[in-house]
Length: 357
Image 1 (cartoon, helix red, strand yellow):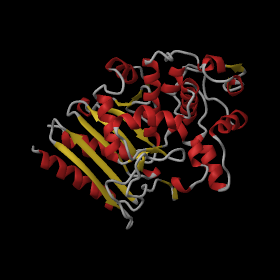
Image 2: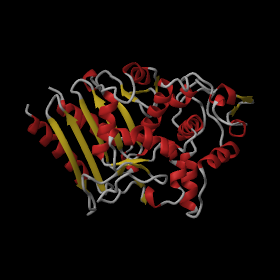
Image 3: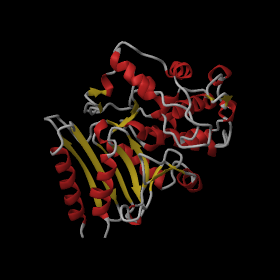
Image 4: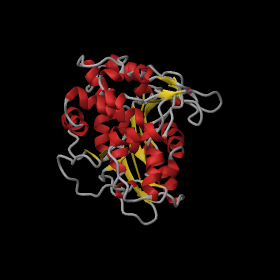
């Protein structure tokens, strides 16, 4: 099969998916494989929206992989160990009463590795605070105050290391650790250590920074139900190091290609990020989770081993994955919360399957 056939089949499936679903206002897909000669970068309008392939996209929790990569870079610089206690990097007031579970204070037992793997047992602050913002549009809160709010209003779900529980709270704390080690705001470190070296000129941290070069296109809409995330004043604070990265898909590709070719972090570090993992369990059956890295597991009769890939997922139908067998970089988003599960199915069954011999 030639590259034109690969591209035309994937493009046809993508455009059909968007056109048949009225919940999608605009969707974007980039598939690049030097091995197969594939170089596809497309956008499809839904509900009459205007779209362009060069529009910056906020890929939601895909930004967590950028945060984990910063932690990995600091590890390689000898500034932290993954097994270090977070209490060694965070101030006493922030740590006080952080993890009280069944009568025991586990705050001092949480490690950086627990945060990276989503095994700290801490609660997720994002959705409760998002709901509060939906009912009270004037409500805003700082990321640090969000942690304090969580101590008062929420309860941990497990002891550290006991189970996988996905939460943005873990990545807020990783952001604070990065700030504490570098002495710089998180967004500045992101620009200095990742965006600028990779030539991501149109990338920024939504709500925190600006790109080094403005795009000629507006940021694509990012919808949680009927609300565009970018229009909510308090949203950046509950995004922070758990998301926030915004860029055209072509610049996310610069990041993914640099990561897979070991130009950001060393091969052995990336291998640890991928392979030091835990089964995610229901409802993400079929995935293991490393250091912000999702790995598609082989499931008899359902998921053949040829579909194995790894990458990161955003709850608004966003994905950034590498498929080793075909050496394909696959990045996209449907920019809608309704696609939080369907997007991964589309990627595996309508993109990767088409790339296989």
